[in-house]
Length: 310
Image 1 (cartoon, helix red, strand yellow):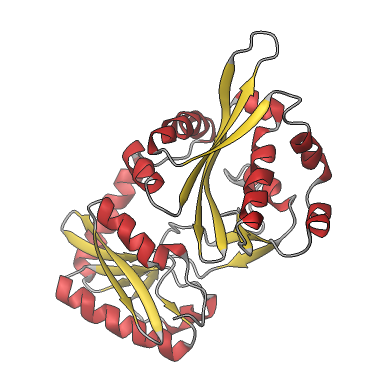
Image 2 (cartoon, rainbow, N blue to C red):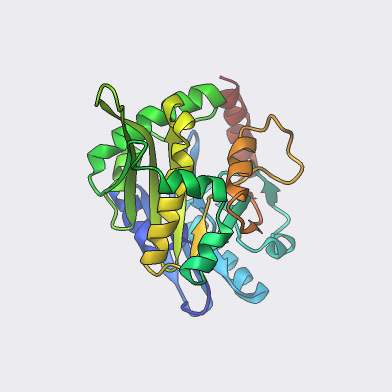
């Protein structure tokens, strides 16, 4: 399927990650569609989850993928198939048994094209953040790119503090560390040296994935000191610059608040920050469940609501 863009979550590289996570998955590629279905266990049975999949270019190809997945789900005795088509127009092609679910991966994302000359590109970046970036060394800030999975602990520490503040969840250390072992992953650490004490601390960290022509900016967090130093802004410019040097064409900021979201939306601040870099919004279809066993699915939904309440 070289004719269309495949998201990293539907790639063979993502399948390798699932194997490292000890997950059961099913990968299939044809001239017309491609999918990676991950088998998930829930009380009472299993379901198949396709993050940003299946991938197909035409309505006919998408329907062929659904037929293939239905046969797979029958073979695996799955209660339902959870899909996230990239094309919103495909929603009308879903069977009557399909039901909208809470979105797992972001339904909206923000993408920056990395094309253009160095001067043209820099003129499109926020001038205020560029100034902080150019003065970073003078202000005791250094940025380190790491492929050591143990460095994920620095990101996790910062994320836990952020999660408590924003009332959002984070991934486990094992999951993030396993991601960090993949060839497509790079950890970035922003370090600040206090000019008086000469003590160095990590004030921001990020985890990016590079796949095909895109850099995905999936994980990031900063400390209170990092906020004062504009560490995330400085780091983001470094991530973008490095992506351009690698010859990548797009920078995916990975998720923004939906249009018209209230100011207190957990992603409101993130969204405003991402949009300062320019770029454009990309909308996906969202998460849908194609139900195969109505009784077991209803039980699953009740237990899911109870778990969310807890």
